[in-house]
Length: 386
Picture 1 (cartoon, rainbow, N blue to C red):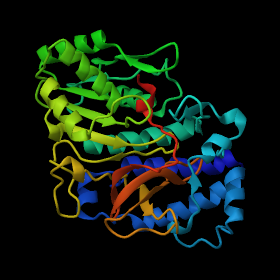
Picture 2: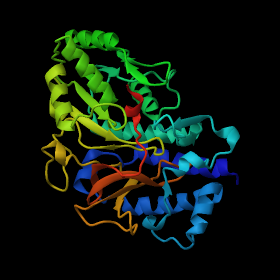
Picture 3: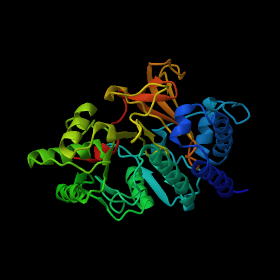
């Protein structure tokens, strides 16, 4: 059996599981955060065996660590590939002729970007994963909601996983009222078309339809600065919300999340409880969110997240996260800081187990962000903004 048929069969089963099962529903996650562990264990070990067979660079990494499918009995024992390896190697199970799409990390201009290769089957799983988990966090009136994406369109940024994510969200909703209000400058940096954004804000304010704004942290800063310069404020219709992602390091002034979200509320009329933060990267196919629209804050083991410092990120049930010690590689204790390690089943055609250079504080099966490691290269879609 070829690699394409083996992995295609696994991908089809996983996609159906994501779309049709209870995986991805908020109710099942909140009542039983450990639900689905048996299914995850089985699928993770199956996928590990396929990836070590068909992904030659990853196989060499596993062999160097003495890890084989017959020796790994639990998903936590699956070797992780560092995100930096995606810069040096084609960490893909796909033959070169089947690599129809590639996502690049939006790192600094002087470094080689990470590359995550996809084909149609890979993108189908990626899109199922992102839509299922997005819908669990944004309870939006389909057909009665406008979208404004503060990034360039996919035609200008075809290698951005974030732009592909936003394009997929807009396309799946079947909404006519959506637009990208960013563009790519001659030097490759992302810029905001402030006049186009202003037009959409005015249109949304008078339409009565909720507006969902999606963008990087820096794109929101650019928009808010422009509104401040023009002395403009908006009261967007009830139900309007925002998705904010990315950081600030490496470009310009930074702004703490409480200050950024306060300005979004002041200038756009979007309540803080309607602002959701996302954590993702081009090397992954699933995203983590820190709260859910319409359910106050996403409960964390019976408690409510009531302030920005306590925003706890969760990946979907078809992914697992560990916070590990940089020195020992072992999982840290509750409340301690370590490197974020993600096991993402939706990464069918590349590497499921990813070691990031991001720091997190452990909260059992979830985490809060604590920055980047000292030697890590600045990265994130906000780096594309100037």
